[in-house]
Image (cartoon, rainbow, N blue to C red):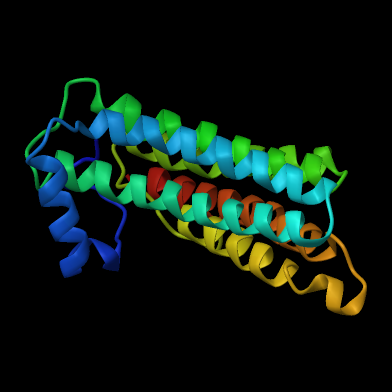
Length: 213
């Protein structure tokens, strides 16, 4: 579930296709919490296939990368539709706020840890996951202190998924110049550094807001 007055700004929320799918889901026995929970499954598949891609070569590697990219986007679609079914569909549940946030934190950890283990740099994967969780922590800390949610980047959730998706797609071409996993390494570094910067930026904004009270 997502809140009605303090939601992440998403252009896709206003598209016809998203509205049609959300209405279809809302008209059936599909709850926002189930959609949120499905995002963890999508992330688990994405993380696992990123790991397998890092451990293989040739056509199997390409197949795993495509699956990883696909399920990263499936994770984002779950994040889109849980809120739309909850708010626009009027199916919000009492425990929705938990399921709105908790699966996202698990999803970040599973995806980036999977990439990290796949490329042989688990520490980098966990760092990217930890900084991603930290960005959300600062946002929720702001809300807990009566401030509006800060969805700013440069590495908010949609930016993290876009970065690792692009890295996965470009990594398909690495065999052409004799590389393997370097693009995924670069992508993971960008996510980790960008998420750390995002956490710092949001923290500074929150401190300023608190001081201005």
